[in-house]
Image (cartoon, rainbow, N blue to C red; front, side, top):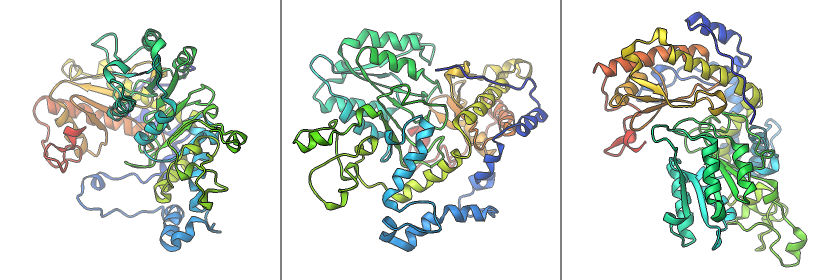
Length: 476
């Protein structure tokens, strides 16, 4: 993984932020998004402000109108006034547009299901424990759903997670991040009886960007299959999944791919695992890697003949199970159209500069009083090569609720992770350097108000409220 070049402004004034915005080569992409106002975020109704980009919106809503007016005919019939194919092929188009973002061949990508479901489907095919090789290595602070999936797969094979699940923990308990050398040493220690490794491309809590090519190559040197959870990496950092020889990867699309909570997900399967030997199948042999099969993964030429002999589509598409919902793919397609207006290298270049700018503003000693400096610290690696757009900020205990409420009251949308971390991710497609500058001012004031007990306490804030008695904040 080559080291990125980071360009950071030497001054930290409002004028400098505006100058960075003026020189931003992809600043025009912000106009592709509807940016909610503070009132939009805080009101308890869905009443919206006037939308001026009605032509663009009308263009993007054609696919929804096709669903409403064509019904089942939209599944097979093309429309002269739409670039979107019939619904039966809409997942293929999405896979083609996603492939450049993850550095893959289009045949190695499928748009389907959810991240957790795709992880189970991949492990059902690629986790093949034996008496000698049965362990799965993952990080100790994996996203809970990944941990649950791995644990349940181990139990499904009638193995004991206490014996079969190896958790990588930082060697220093005072550090939240892991070094590449430590990850490699854990692999070495357990290589003889490990069947699978699952790691995050970008760790969700700390924002650390792991060295995917180095770790993947090391796993393969021991004959170990390795997969990657790219939930926080896809659309965030440059990926070369095919060239890095990654076995499989899964991701969601509601973070940097802008498609909303619960949006349809994606997976990558290296072409070596997606090969189909039709001659072997004709001779009555398997002819393809075992998997949990479904009709949408079957040969498109015979799919609607309703036969009962499964012949998978070569590549990732052959791992599909059910017919993906066309409506669920539409928000993703709208986002991928924006990505197609630029490149991941351009997005990453702006991200490096913007995240470095955010770090500089948060860390400026000359602008931060001693009292304030003790209220927070950044736990994301300072090396630009080891992070994406995200900076995770560890607050002094007891400040989180007050800080989050103050940020929300000021129209700032960030994420919290109990008990004391907020995750700040300036998204290069639509955030500006001026946004970053304003955030830091608001954040520093919020920290001081929470520290002095002056922060607002609201029970109905978006990040604190929930239908359960303990609220969304407790759940997160």
